[in-house]
Length: 155
Ligand SMILES: [Zn+2]
Image 1 (cartoon, rainbow, N blue to C red):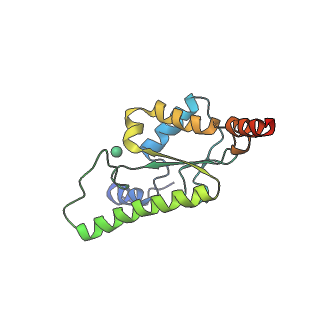
Image 2: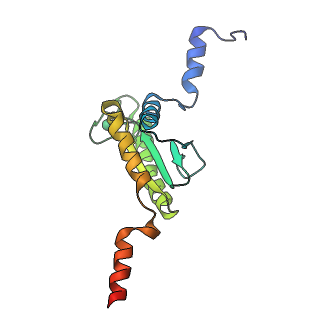
């Protein structure tokens, strides 16, 4: 196929393409794969468009960029120029993250949010966090519930 753009224009076009394969997300997927986790779907149509979705286990995973989602640990300074543009944009992201989490939980989803810096530092433990969530028993068959049920019937 012919290259329609010169390198400069093309890189500008590319940068606008949705970051489906952003670095941290790919690293997380690789770490999950290494742990034997399979069967996620990408960007399912759910509130907030989670990055990875496990439909059967009803687990939604978000990978949050530390800058865009105002990670408190990294506390990346917002650009001084154009504050009127950046501040509301980032604040909106943070507000939306909260709202989306509530919406998903109300729909019966478990939500896992992972910061970009956590994946950069230790993708394996991030994958482990997701795996732990996947292995949680369904709420209907949790041992604590069964215990409560049997102890009440013993009375
Ligand atoms: Zn961070």
